[in-house]
Length: 505
Image 1 (cartoon, one colour):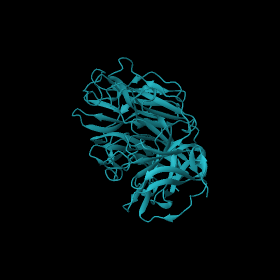
Image 2: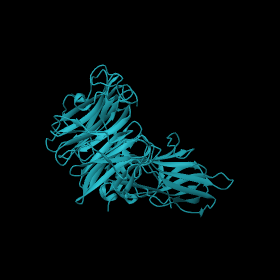
Image 3: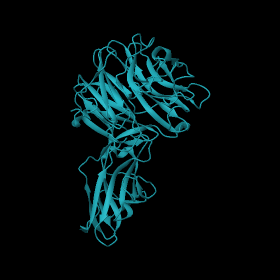
Image 4: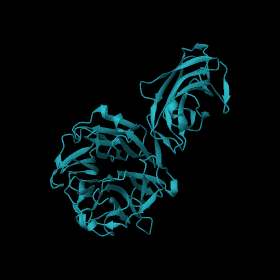
C-alpha cells in the first residue's frame, strides 16, 4: 500500500505492509495512568520498551497507532519521544509529532531497537474534559521491513481528561498548593488554595488565599481572585491552608485559614492569643455565590485555648450538618506541642464559634462527614504513619470514639486526604481521596464506601493519577452523577470530573 504525506509526516489509514515478523525483537507497552490535562504540555500515555535479543543493530522506521475516533477532535497533537530510562518523561529527544486525523495512522520515526519510547498527548483549548482518550501503539516497522507487534499490558489504555486549574509560575506565583473545593446550591464550584509567591515552602512566608470559580461543573474556570491578603509586609505575613464550606441556610460560603504574622505558623507559635504570640484563626465569607468576599474576621480568641501553641483548620472543606450547624475540621498543638485533630463549630451560622476536645493525640490534618443526623466521623492524618485514623462523636466532640477501621483500612503516607458524603441513586456514599500508599506521595486514588466507612472495597476504588505529587486533594459532588477532584501535582493544581458510575455500578 502506498504511503501518503500528511503535514510532512508519513501517514495512512491502515497498517503498513508486512514483510515478516522479527522474533528477536520484543516490544512491550505499559500505559501511564494519569489524566490528559488541558493546559499541560506533558501528558504521558504509554511506555514502549524495545528489547533486541540479536547482536545486530536494528532501526525502527515507522510506528502504527489506533486513536479512538470520538476524541480525535480534542487532540492538538500526539508526540513520540525516546528515553534512556523508564518513567523519566524527558522531552529532549522528540522522534515525531503529528495531528491524528484517522483512527488508524502510521507515522515515520527514527529509533533503535534497544531503547524506551513514550507517547505524549497535547489537548486543544476546546477539548471536552468529559471525553476519554484511548491511544494504542499497534506495531513498529524496521528499516528492513520487518513488523514488530506491540504486546500490551493487561491494563486500560483509556485516559480521562481534565484541566490544569493553576500552573506553577502562572500570575507570578511560584507554587499553588493546598486545595479546597465545594459546590454551592447554584451548582457553582468554589476552589480555594494557597498562592505561594516565592517558593513551595509552607508558612511563614509570602502566601495569600486564592479562589477560582466555575459555573459549568468545572469545565471552564473564571480568572483567579485573591480573597485573603493580610496586607504589608508581604514576607512573613502570610495566610494559608484554606478550608471551605457552604451554608445552605444563609447561602454563605465560608473560608477558614491560618494567618502567620511573623514566624507564627506551626514552628514559631507560642501560647497566647495575640498575632504577636501565635497563629491566628481567620475567616472570610461570600454572600453572592463567590463573586465578592468579606474582609478577614479573626476568631482566635473565641476558639483557641491560650495555653495551646496553635489552633488552625484542617485544609480542604468543612460541612453544614443536618441541623444547620457549621463545622470545620481543625487541629490544635497543646502546651507540650503535641497535635490533636478536632473540630470548630458554629450553631448560629457563623456568628459564634466553639472548639471541641481532641479526637486523638499526634494527629493533624483531618476531614469530616455527618454519617447520620448528629453523628460526625473525623478522618485524620496520623503522625504514626502507614494508615489514617478515624473517630466518631455524637456530642459535637465532647467525647470521641475511635472507629474500628482506624489505623487499618486506609493507607496513608502521612498526608492530607479528602473525605465527603454524597448521594447516588438515592443512597448515601462516602468518598475518600489521598495518595494510596503507606510510604510515598503518588497514586492519587478515590475510594467509595457504601456502608458509611465500615468497608472500602477494592472494586470501588479508582486510581486517578499514578505519578509522584505533593499529595493533597479535595473532592466535591458536582451533580447527582458526578464528583470532582482537585489535587496537587508538583507546584500546580489539576481538576478532573469523575462519573460516579465508573466506581459504583
